[in-house]
Image 1: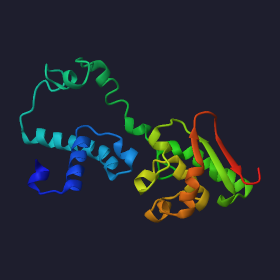
Image 2: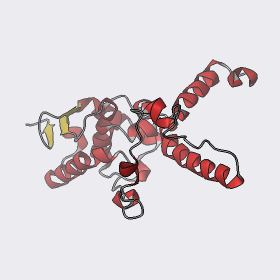
Image 3: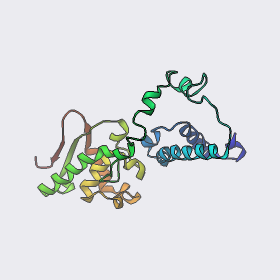
Image 4: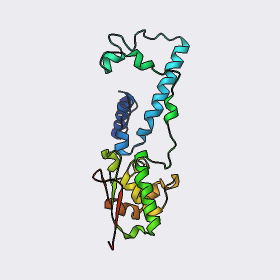
Length: 212
């Protein structure tokens, strides 16, 4: 309805519908497609928390049984039971934020180990990317979007192991400066991506070169 009122064309209407779908609770479809929408999930969650606190501060009347009520959160989205002991266990004593980490590379964390292994193998053996005919990499958790070969945006590049390995082989480094539209469209990188397979059939990284 809002798209109609704003006289959106088909593309903008589709975008509005997909944003609305994401705002209902978030999804990883943005990771799959490499859209900017994936970056909204964490931000929107924080925004909702701030909005809730500000509404309470203003005196706006809230439900009393929003979690455990007959039409509350647990009844609508859970198993109809609110486990208060589990919900408040460790409250004020343990903090999830302390379990966070700093990423060594500006991409999905599961891509770090195989990418770092590739950089080491290439440096130790003085390899050039043009010598590589095949790369087989094991990944901690093979989600389909992490093994995708089709990469056309920076966001999708940050969640693609084939791209990460191809880019690391060609550029010999992995920094924020490598994640640009220019790098995504680099012909050497795009040419190496199809030579990468992602598997759980073995541990580690296998690189086959032209003379072996």
